[in-house]
Image 1: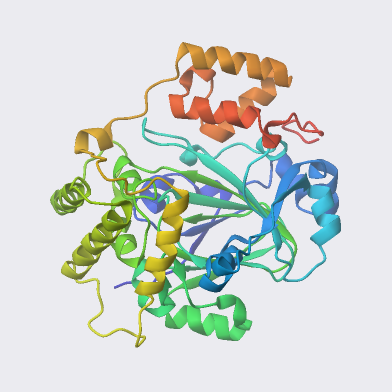
Image 2 (image 1 turned 135 degrees about the horizontal axis):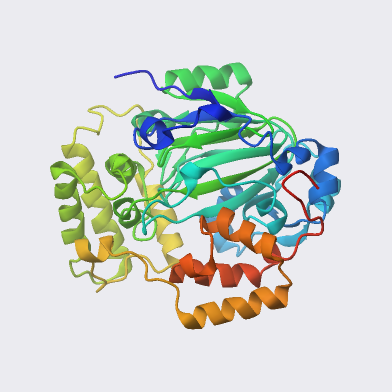
Length: 434
């Protein structure tokens, strides 16, 4: 097996990106991909305050720390996580920017127009089939903060770009799971508790790789890779989640809560090319999962446990389960407890829900006339200029007109226009600068 590495290329070297990196699921840093675009003016704190100071942000506890409130003692004491607070980037920088290891961060915040207008979506992120969809989120945190080791359950490809500050990125393939001692889609290894030398030793021991991204850089992170993010100083970034095929969508959090067994079984499906079909072995896995998914169960909890066992059995049959565990005790029981709590806040594993290959591969219908009418009214009421709307459509959805949207995208755009992120930006940028 070849050594797991993070490649590095220049912004001028992104030709054939799908064939070179996306389909083989090879992580890569693209240096200066946004260096010649207006967003580069926000690379310093002074520039960020000037261009993005009034940008709305939702300030909350870092999401993995919210797990504290799901622990049995916290549930029994009826302790609740603090409510998020809507404010501006300038206020965040004033209140928390200088605080080391502050719990207060901006995480997975729907990318506001202030940022959407400031760059052009890379061509390799644009939808190439009716199944592809885009999601963009922003992240901001103070120095010595982190995003705990985890993998994403939506199974999209990710391009993470740095706006200001620098961020360390540790990546691990699914084969590193025994070393990170998984707890659902989280690793119980706390890289944030290690000094830089210890962290590098652990990364090498576990078969991972580490790099640093700076303003205007971006890193491509393939689906289902373990990743840990380290705020080396006060920093902001945003991601573009793209390119998910219908098979990865079926195996994602839209139907299942993930653990290391589902992670390893599902990861190869991310390499299916647009418009291609699964190979014979992949189709056999899908058939088995669909058949199990369609069985009758007495409750959501029963269905959850049954499906988790299906992925565990496939994982073992494919030779992915180590003969001897690295840790004496697994965290499967703790994962079960945490997932059972998560079932209380979603609609997964409903008994009686059925699916099929036809349902899985049927794309989202196109936008309806009623949706277009509602969007026209909302856009007019918001006061969007033509260039701003063009930027939002292209960067948020990869589309060039409202009629190109599908129904799900139209619903998301309407919700966006009614949200704080959809406000007309205080500073309007041009392609040459602000």
